[in-house]
Structure formats: structure tokens, C-alpha cells
Amino acid sequence: MTLKRLTAFLVVLLCLAAEGWADESFLPDKLPILGGSKAYMPSLVTGDMFVGSIFVGLIAGLITGVIGAGGGYILTPALMSFGVRGIMAVGTDQFHLFAKGIMGTTIHRRLGNVNFGLAAWFVLGSLFGVTAGGRISRALFQHSPVLSDAVISSVYVVVLGILGFYALLDCRRERRPAAGGGGEAGFRLARWLQALPLKPRIAFDHDIVPGGRSISVYPVIFCGFVVGFVASIMGVGGGFLTFPMFVYGLGVSTFTTVGTDILQIIFTTFYSSIFQYAAHGFIFYSVSVGMLLGSLVGVQIGAMVTMMVSGSQIRAFYALTILAGFSNRLCALPRKLADLGLIALGRNTAVIIEQVGTVLFFAIVGLFSLWVLVAFFRNVKQERARFQAENGRTGGGLVAKPLSFWTGVAGVLLFSVLLAVGLMPRSDGRTLLSRADHFFNQLAKNSAYNVPAGLKRAAGFEGQFVDHGIRPRELMHPQQIVRVVSASGLTATELEDRRVRVTGALRALAEAALDDADLAFHNEGGQIRRKHGMADPDVLYCWWIVFDGLARRFVQDGKAAEANFCKFITTRVL
Image 1: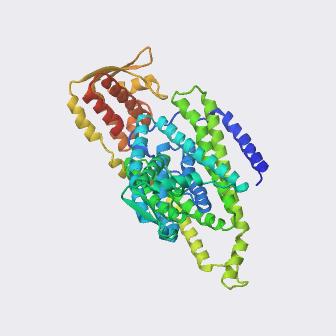
Image 2: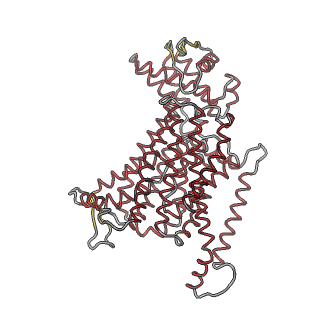
Image 3: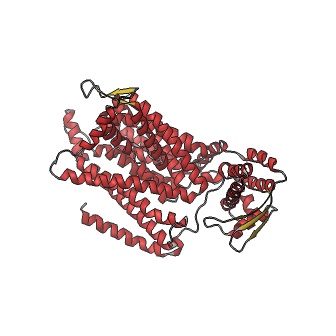
């Protein structure tokens, strides 16, 4: 497809989307605040959501098969474009990449190229990086869901922007005559690091370089830390960072890098998805399974296409997919910053900019997927003829590999049956997928059930009274906070400066908030709505605002015990 045709296609898509932007009903009603353990992951899964996740996984699988990258840099922006919270998109993506890693057949083909010394020290650093990145990501979310989304989007803009534009420059250099010295700067760094007289050291590339190479473990650990940190915040496997770090930074051969990278992705995404996100309820399991099913199909098609196209074409489309994720998060940033109050931007304008990024994103990745599928079907006959020639066959039936073909057909039929069973409503109206989602989420929530501990700590503040002004935050009206506090038998009034004055016993205030949190945890949102006349996530967010404001005030007053208790309520319960 020529550049002119691509441009015309994008313009048509933007024009078709303009009607939706102009309609006020197209805009979301309000910011979907997550509060309470229940809201960490919705237990309701629709058929459309699951089918959509298969489509997104198929695109990521095509990218993986053609380019070799994990596709995580496409999945997280796609999920966020569908309205999934950034932290949940990251956790879901990490879990999907881990599952795909242990199921991928490429592991068995490439495991012989793994240097286990490099992998072990690199994984050690990545585990520290994942821990740091996961804690920062959760802390940002607990402080402000909008800030969390803004930070995740900003990291995508910076990382994908640098990689994308560098990839485009690399494509331009390929079209020019060799000028010499293109990668010399990177290899100078590798030689310098390998010459550092620090022990212990790792030996590698014995089969490629006479005598092999060696390097101190400390640069390897540092690279692992950086990759793990970025991967846990972006929701990616880190392969697009590992490759340049190993090849240009550490001087490792391409073959060893590929095998070692596959191994580190398994360990990194396992630790990140299970211990940093699943244990805290930040994974949408049904969506992850759907993406896995789609990606496994896409990988097989994409891998066959790599034998039919040139390397320069693959690198060019790699650059385009990187820039697709970059443009998507870049256009989403203005709305995030406006929600935070950091920039003055109208709501309609911010949403239009965000939707432009969404259209560009899906247009680019959609065209990439279309190109892969067209290349696949266009070259099927040639590939079949090549296979028959290599195996001494002529003529024959329509199917060149009957066993592989019928195995694939059986797999498709089995998948279709399982999908139909999973989406079929039961007697209570819930599907099997929604039941599974609810079950796994309950396990994750049980690991973060801190209501009893909160009640025990609240008893220690008997006789402690509060009388402080609380400032509302992020789309929550003062009267909503007044309603929540007053419905619990406490006193709250709106002041002239729009702050809410909260007066009463600290223990009673905490017990009221903990009671609502406990109802939310046990999926009794209806009781919360009847009590307060508000949606249960909004009620819990009001309580979060109250205790966050009290914690700040207690810090100013030098009351450490009270401040720590309020911080416990906001970070561990609400």
C-alpha cells in the first residue's frame, strides 16, 4: 500500500469518527474511579469484551510472529483505549505475556542459544526492577487513579517515541550507501564494559568468538533492573529493550540475546504478573485468556509471513507499530493532564484529541494486520509448492501437510466449542467466564483483605475527635462527601471555599468507612447504594478523599500515629 493510499485511508477514518465526536452522548459521563477491593477488577465479563480481547490478541500475535517482539507495547495502549484502567491493563498484559511465554513453541527452538549465566544475573536485576516498578505503579494508583494513567501514558510516550523515531532513522540509513562506523559507538561501550576488572564475571559466546567473551555481572544486573522497572510499569515483556542493551551495550551476540531474552521474559512476567499485580487484584483474567487465544493464532500466521517478505519491510513495519502505540498515548495525555488540573483544556477538546489517537492507533495496527494476512494468503501456493519440492512430492491434494492441517482444524473446533460454552449464560444469567473471573479475583482480593486489621487499629483511637476541612478531588462534588459522611451518623458541612468540614470521633469515622469497604468486598454494592443513594465506587472514593485529607492534616499537626492510621485506611483498605 502506497503512502498516498495510506494517508487517504486515515483521512476517511477520521472523517467517519467526527460524527461521534460531535455527539455529546459519545462522551463518557464521568471519570470511572476505582475504590475498594471489589472495584480492582469488575467481575462482569461480556461476550463483546471477550471477543474484542481475542481481536487485540490476534493483532499482537501477528506482530510477534512477523517482528519477533512480544507485542506488549500494543496491548496495553489498546486496552487503555477500551477504557481499562492503566494499572489493570499493565497487569493483564503481563499475565498474558507470561502465559504466552510458557506456551510458545519458539522457546523449544531457541533454548539452545541461552546463556544461563547471563540469564540468571539479568533476571536477578529484573526482579528488583519489577518490584520497584510495581510498588511505584500501585502507590500512584492508590494516590490518584488519574495520575497513575497519566504516568503510564507518559512512560509510553517517552520510550516508544525514542524507539520509534530511532527505528525510522535506521530504515532511512538502510536506503543509503554504507558510510561506515554506523554502530561503532555502541560497540565501543560494549568493549569498555567488558574490560572493567570487576568480579564475578560471566563467560559467553564461546561458540561464536574464539575463546569467547566475558563481562562483569554488575552491568548485566543494572540492565536487568532497568528492563524490569520499565516492563512492570508499561506492561511489556521488555524484549524491545533487552535486545539493544545486550547487543550494543553488553556486546552479546544476536543469537545468544534472542534465547536469553525469551528466558528472562518468562521469569520477569511471572514475578510481575503474579506477585506485583495478581496478588493485589489488578488482572482481568478473561481478557488475558482472550488475548492469549488470539495471539497464538496470530503468531503462527506471522511466523510464516517472515519467510515471504524482506528484512527491511519487517523493520519498517516494526517502526510503524511502535509509532502507533506512541501516537495513541500521546493523544491520550492531554485529557489525563486536564483531569489532574495541570493544563486548562476543555472536556470536549480533550476527548476529541484522545479519540484521534485511538483512530490512528487502530488504523495503523489494522493496516499492518491486513498486510500480514494478504501476504500470507498471497504466498500460500508458493509455500506449498516449495514444501512439495523439498519433500519430493508432485501434484497431490489441496493440503500439503494433512496431519498439521487436520490438527489445526481440530484445534479450531475445540476452541469454538469452549468459547461457546464459556459465553453461554447459566441459570443466574452469568457466563462461565464471568464466574471464573469472579473466582480468581476473589482469591486475589483475599490476599488484600485488611478490614479486620483496620477495625482493630480503629479501636485504639477511642476518644480521639477530628474537626478538619477536607478538599474534594477529581470530579467529586463537596455535597457528595457531605452525603456519605452524614449518612453514617457523623457531621459534615460544606464551607464557602468548597472544602468539607468533617467533625466527629475518629474511631466512628473509620468504622463507617470500613463497614462500607467490607460490603464492597463481599459484593454487597446494593446495600451501599441504598444507604447513601450513590454508586458504591463513588462512596468508597469519597471515604478515600476524607481519610487522605485527614492523613495530610495529621502530618502537618505532627500526629504520627493518627496519620499512619489514616494512611493505612487509604492504601490498604480503600
